[in-house]
Image (cartoon, rainbow, N blue to C red; front, side, top):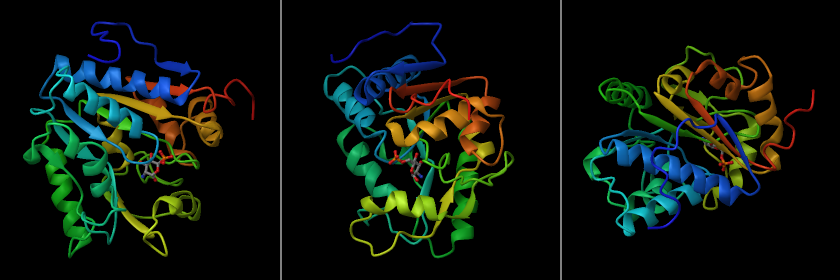
Length: 257
Ligand code: GLP
């Protein structure tokens, strides 16, 4: 068994700052493993991006070590680019298969992904929203934070009441995400994302933010009143949200701005 196996380590700190991104990621993996060990049928909300990659690597290791099984767990992903089929290497669906699903023991039937290449995006929103409604609710939602404060693809301007929908991506986001989209000349400018209200419906939320580039978004999310200007700030309205930061992401906390 790798990592620590703290299973009943309550009460948890709601904001924990680690020296390094690796330590923060390992702590998130431990938190998620505890959840699934306690409730093997847990419904997990999953995120993409560079930030959770080490978390997923740790989950895979835990499966390989026999420390956990995801065979009864169900997953829902937060978002997807419109227009990218799941077979496209830059789709979030392909990311999830590469970084987690194909190397762990998830049951295919319990993996829920948004189809970026659906013939009708509105129909796809309807289909996925129905799946979410029938899920019994997400037990644990993992989130990352955009440099502009977005969560999922809920860009600044997103309302607290927003639900699963098609969104236009901001220039900031298009720019930040470009380096990962190696095979595309341009990043798709639209996406389907779970809304703020969908995210806040989760029973428990983990936010993992690492690196100085996230420091300002972290500060605004934690220290400014909840508002559409910084969607991460809506998390303050949830009773059960855990922030895992590294020193870089936490570097603006405490300063007034
Ligand atoms: C993307 C995703 C988000 C993610 C964010 C941060 O736009 N839609 O869910 O949290 O970017 O990505 P990264 O972890 O690569 O910084």
